[in-house]
Amino acid sequence: MVETYRNIRPDDYDDLLDVVRHWEVVRQLGGWKWPCDPVQVRERSNPYKGNGFVWAICVNDRLIGSIGVTNGDIGYMLRPDCHGRGIMTRAARHAIGEAFRTTDRAYLTGSTWFDNAQSAQLLAKFGFRHWQTRYMHARARGRPTLVHHRKLTRTTWETLEKRRAMP
Image (cartoon, rainbow, N blue to C red; front, top):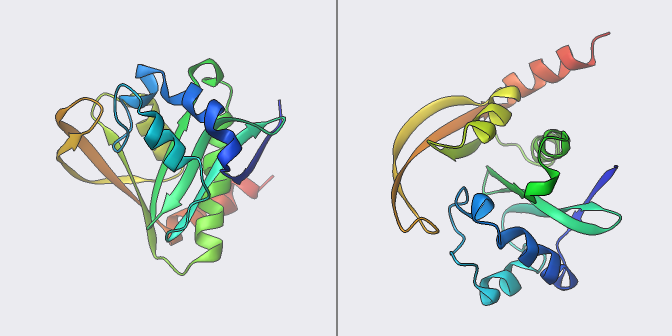
């Protein structure tokens, strides 16, 4: 399986809806409603126009998830049947690299709910370090939830990428 990355498009609606119909996905996202709202999915099925990017993660041009860096903050989601295959690790490496290549940001941020160990592990793999814990409203959960905020500095990223490139 080889993934590709591209801007999300309106014809991704059905595939995006298929991702966010899973509670185990949406419960880990900050801004998504539960149960999934077709209007919200339609709004998110368009190319991102803000500061940064949001890409479709695709296999055979079919959306299986998304990843983006918006306003310096990384976020991602993936269909549950695609977990455990390294897909998000490859997507995150690509997205982080792109974010640092195309901006002059000194750091990126990423956040995980207290009970999302897999996502915390993914961010740690790339050098994100904890800098703050607080309660935030989790839209899908409908209540304040403990969230861990992490930062990745450009210097840490560049150092880790140099080490990865060494034979």
